[in-house]
Amino acid sequence: MKFRILLVAFFTISILSCKTEQKNETKPKLVVGIVVDQMRYDYLTRFYNRYGEGGFKRLMNHGFLATNANFDYVPTYTAVGHTSIYTGTTPQSHGIISNNWYDKYENKFIYCVDDANYQSVGIKGLAGQKSPYRMQTTTITDELKLAQNQRGKTIGVAIKDRSSILPAGHTADAAYWYQGGDDNKFITSTFYMDSLPQWVNDFNSNKKADGYLSKPWETLYDINTYTSSIADDNRYERPFQGEEKPVFPHDLPKLRKENGNYSIISSTPFGNSLTLDFAIAAIEGESLGKSEFTDFLAVSFSSTDYVGHQFGPDAVEIEDTYLRLDKDMESFLNYLDQNIGKGNYTVFLSADHGAVQVPSYLQSLKIPAHYFNILNYKTHITNELKTRFGSGDFIENVSNFQIFLNKKELKRRRLSVDEVSDFLVEVSINYNGIYKAITAKTLQETEFSSGILHKIQQGYNQKYSGDVILVPLPSTLGGSRQGTSHGSGYSYDTHVPILFYGNGIKQGKSSEPYFIRDIAPTLATLLKVEFPNGTTGKVIAEALK
Image (cartoon, rainbow, N blue to C red; front, side, top):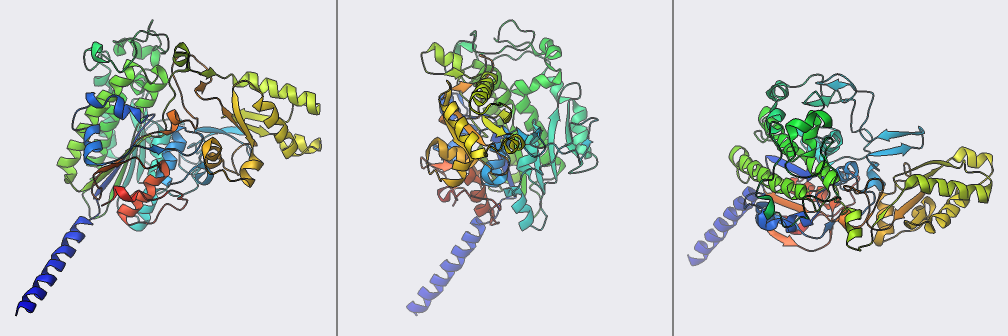
């Protein structure tokens, strides 16, 4: 009798355990991918004590945080970062090697998402002639679509076209981006549809941007409390057109005329707020998270990048932008709780790259930092080629710290690519400002397992990249001594957050080394779908329940 009771109890517990396990394994109704453009990892820690409990802190303390996450390739640009996050691989495989790059087959510069086969939707002109066709691999959004037999919706939203199009993938229902100027509209391409849905037309008619631009941009709190930033009045930041100094308050109603009218919103924290408004409108307009299939919303907050470029990582403007984004994040998570339901959605948050502190500011502190003039460098190597080979016509293009050789001219003069490439490496490494140089042949024949040359190799695409790759000294920029940029393989550009939160995510923190390309296979495992077809990342198993 006791044995029967024990047996019944055992089977009852087993059945209940199976039901509980099945319940816990329910897929999310909605996945929200968030990419914060130009978000260095230290923006989480520097401003932590100023964040509220419901935004970044909620993700950090109740989700999974990877504190040692990096990009393991060069170059660290917007299009490359978004593509790498969603494809689970690097430019070596996915083919997006920059935002703009020199096409050695067409002998011209190309933009990553330009596609003249399609037309603008929602606006006249060329702004909507876009598609993701240059991306050679699938994304996690594609794989989710394939696994559900094209059911479930995928929507991309951003101010920047590339930040919306590339994450949404080849199979997206829509990707929308913002057209400023005098238009003030979210638009799309005939790659996705022939006309805007009514909910998009309604949103565009509401003129929400006017509300954000109707008053000056002042600090959210007393400016004297912004002690994580340098003095507001300094020479390392770039003012808006029409401003004498880059200081608060920024009089947006007055400045918008000289700064592209509605386009000025991109360079303020309110561009992020406008993006969030549109993302919520997309959830409601497309009924995301309401069907039996999993939907995917890819959101990129682009204004952090515009503000960063203009003012730099140490500016009061950056601190204020992140404090405001934290409030937007809290609002968004609360909205998801109420409208999708706690436990029904999964969020990840990361960045497409970081940024270097303004080199002129670092120089003022006696920290090595540099400015590199690419035109002077090109003149130098051209002269060196003339001295060595009698001609400088072998250089077809120098851009993105890559040299493309003129193969026809080399052949005509009976010179080999290897001979000239090796000479250029020798000349370049002795040039002030260049730290390393390597030929394409070396990248093809030698495997580098660590260090900056490993990152160069991961970013090198045999079909599209140049013949010689250059690495500048740390903390190097070209151009203006005000504001900042990115693109290198140094930690200030590669160290970014990885955060997971919600359905299927285990609460915790890890300092183990992870890479951005690990996000897609981790999501694929959570969603029980195939990895994107170029995946080279690994599953972050400790983030999953």
